[in-house]
Structure formats: structure tokens, C-alpha cells
Amino acid sequence: MLPSRLKRFDEAGLLFALIVMVLAIGILHPEFFDLGSIKTLLRQSAFVGIMAFGMVYLVSMTEIDLSVGGIYAVSATSAALLIKAGIDPWIAVGLSFAIGAALGALNGLVAVLLDVPLIIVSLGSLSVFFGLNLIISDASPVFGMPRDHAFFVIFGGEFLGLPSPAWVLLATGIVMHFLFFRTRFGATVRAVGSNRNAAEFIGIRVGLTRILATSLTGLLCAISASMALAYFRAVDPAMGEQKELLVIAAVIIGGTSLAGGSGTVLGAFLGVLIITVIDSGIVFFGIDTNYARFVTGCVILGAIALDRILKRSRAASSHMQSHL
Image (cartoon, rainbow, N blue to C red; front, side, top):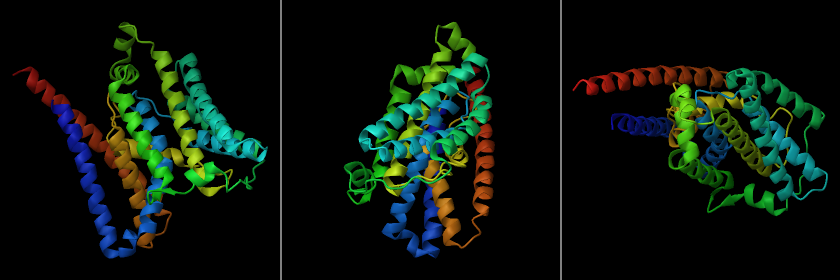
């Protein structure tokens, strides 16, 4: 019971911190509460948050994928080029989903075959994917999307007064939460993260689970990329760069343990909002944007420190209860 209470406390603490930051910025800069600013914040959060939900699965397995930005870029560029070639946007986006999932699965497959951590493989595939993106795009932006097509109208616009990507973020978060806590696959992911050797001993196919999790993350990167394509109606060869930092930061800040075995999709969502609010605060306060990465890094270090403190607290509590 104690770990679940601590997790709820973690998420409540994140929500409290988010509210404090929002009020601190909004009171000094009331324009922060303008509807336009809120919509922009939600849209930016969606692009990172959808990818972060997949990273929750990987981090809970003690894995980290550094190539998510590259998968995001290749997926967006592939969809844009297919549309430019005359393929219907719905079909082009569907194919980009398959490409994203395949690139993610490739990461997992190489990691399994070489028997190395995913972070090592993705360190190389990060450059491979961004290089591939430059090749297929000829290092040039891709314009000329059919703006009046239903795909761009629906997902590049708004629904019930909010940006469509924000609704996709919400729907994806609900599905990922259910998958993580209410399905056999989610239980398998958590089991592998808790103790890989024990998982193998009881018959769990650890290699397959790793590949499926990386494929899922790649798919979510492609979904996020399609939302960006729908909104911007164009892609830039540099899109996706440094996205991995924001995604990993959101997951760690959100409370998914680096020690593995547990994760929180809701926490990742709150983590994304916190990062986006920090970035917005830097803009509203007129601080040099170069400080954005510095501040984000400091927040990551703080979240890692908190993760270790909570882990030790839980271990001490469990040890105490076992002796009662």
C-alpha cells in the first residue's frame, strides 16, 4: 500500500508545483492566461507528451531511447513527401505510422541481437535517423500540403475550443494508461523492469517485450509527428532535434523510476506541462532562451535526486514493515 500512496503523493506534488508555477507566471504576466497562450501551451505539450507516453514504458524497463527525435523527424518528412507525391494524406500518415513503428522496432531488435542496453543502440541510431531524414528531404523543407484536406482541417485546427493535438494527447494518454496497468503487456513490461532475470525464469520473452515496447514508442513518435505536420502544414529537416531531452525529462520529472518496475503516464503528462510552462515562463520574463536547456537540465537533476530519495524511502519502509 505504501508505494501506491507515495506514487499518488508524487503526482499530487507535481500538480501542486504546476499550479504554483502557473500562478507565479500569470500573476506577474496576466497575458499568460490569455486563451491564445493556453492553446499554444497545450499544443506544444501534445507534441512532446505523446512521445513521452511511450518513453514511460521504456524507462520502466530501465531502458532509454535517445533516437525518438530522429524517428519523429523521419516520420513527419516521410508523410509530407508521400503527400507531395500525390498520395492521400490519410494513407500517407498511416504509412508514416508504420515507418515510425518499424524504426522503433529496429532499435529494439538491434539491442536484443547485440545484447546491449537500448541507450547504446539509440545513441548511434539517433545520428542514423537524422541523417536519413536529411537524405530523403534533400536537407530542404517540404511545403505545399493540401491545406483544405480533411486531415489538415481536423488535426491542424481545433475541437471544442481546444487544439486538436491536445485531444489526441488526452486520448493517447488514456489508452497508454490502460495498456500499462490493465493488460498483460503492461504487466510484462513492469515485470521485466523489476527483475529481468526473474522475468526470464518465469517464461517471459524479454527480447520480444523490448522490441514491442520500442516499436510502440516509435509509433507514438509518428503520431506526434503527424500532429505537427497537420498544424504546421510543412516539415523542416531540423525538426525533432533535442526532442529526446524534453521527452526523457518529462518522464523522469513525472516520477517514472529509473530503477524500473513502475511508471506513471499521468506523471509524464504533468511533467510535460511543467516543462512547457517553464519554457513559457522564460519567454514571458524575457530571459535569454539559451537558459531554457540549462533550467530543464537542472529540473532533470532534481527529479533524479528525488527519485533516488523516494526509492530509498520505499526500501526502508518495506524493510521496516517486514520486521513488524
